[in-house]
Image (cartoon, rainbow, N blue to C red; front, side, top):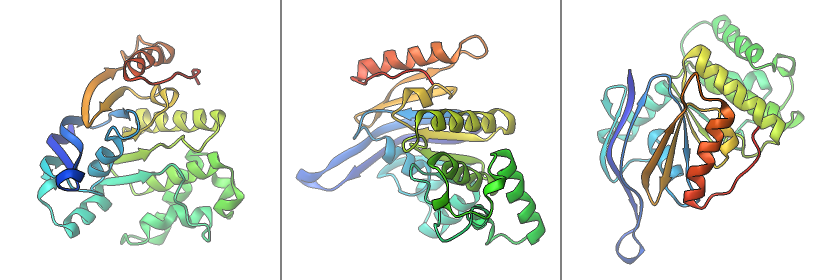
Length: 256
């Protein structure tokens, strides 16, 4: 089932001689349950694309249909309401509140929702347990490692039951072991709970956990890969990702 669709999306910053076209006619369809990575060099438009998908920015032209609603014609108040209902975010540097405990950080998206506190508490405890962070419930983020903080951020993204999780370089601040554990958790969330995940990453290791890769360059999606499930191994998919990156001038890394 289609959860979102972009039709000929452009995004232009500045005017006249300073005009920059960040996106140049992007067409994209995401199905419910997709686990999709967006890859490309710096300045390719991937962050702009993620911001538009997350209703944090609006396109200059084109249509954005999110769960059957034309987002591109909405006012800021409507956008904010839809974003809070449908989308959760995971950021590279976690965006946790240092003065709050782990429990309270995860509870944040539920504070404005009108149902019993016990139900909210049970939901927070459920996701802490699923992500293996229940023993840190009373600790502050500054007392945790980077990998542990990112798991807190993922629990916070999951607790509101949003349809779509948008992740911006979620492994960018993590070591190799923590990055692998994080991607395994995201993959599990996608496969077992059917959450739709869109992730911007420069890392082919992280992207190899996804089922679909979009490569963007000069504001255009110029190539797409899909993992041949169940026959294609993660290592084989990783090798295909590297082939495309080589065409784009990207580097290589070891398989996680």
